[in-house]
Image (cartoon, rainbow, N blue to C red; front, side, top):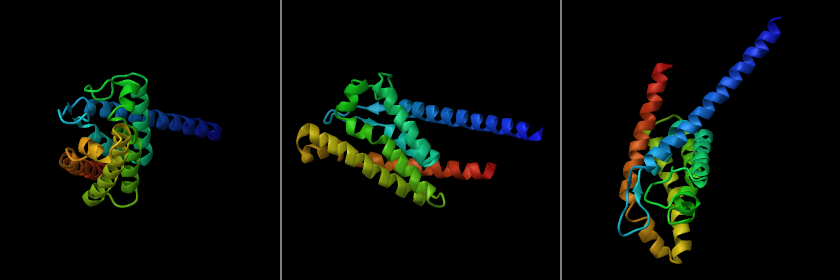
Amino acid sequence: MAKPAAIALNREGRALYWVEQTAIVISASLFVALCARITLPLPFTPVPLTLQNFGVLLLGLTLGSRRGFAALALYLIEGASGLPVFNPAGPGGLAQMMGATGGFLLVYPLMAGLAGWVMERGKASFGRACAAGVLAEIVLFAGGISWLAVLTHSFAQAARFGLYWFVFAEIIKVMLAAAAATGWQYTRKEQA
């Protein structure tokens, strides 16, 4: 008699686990949507300055590679389906994914996945989180500038539109996301 009860409890536990993981991924995608609302359009480039990248980094560093990737893949699906999750300065939906910011948007799952993967490979520290953030930013700019180069037919113009104006802000975002992620990891361990 004890065996069927144990099996039922195990099924309940697994179901609860998946409900919890789904809620985390959905909440994380909505967090990035909120970060996208904090946008500063720049008059000299079609790419706005936004907190989306900070949100992506923070999620990758705190949720890990799988959940971070899943949350940002869901975010792209939400945006492509027309939900107002992208920055309000753009046209929204698929048009925004095909526009000037499309290359940046499309690499968000890879960016979060890479940051999470690096954090999972060792002891959580500020240095590791910064290194993960820098690697993720390289992926971000590679995707964004490559797409801008396709649209403008000029790598130099793509770099002017999508790189030079943003480097300082991205350094700050990496540092803040690394500090928040390592602080969160430390707090979580203290509570355990």
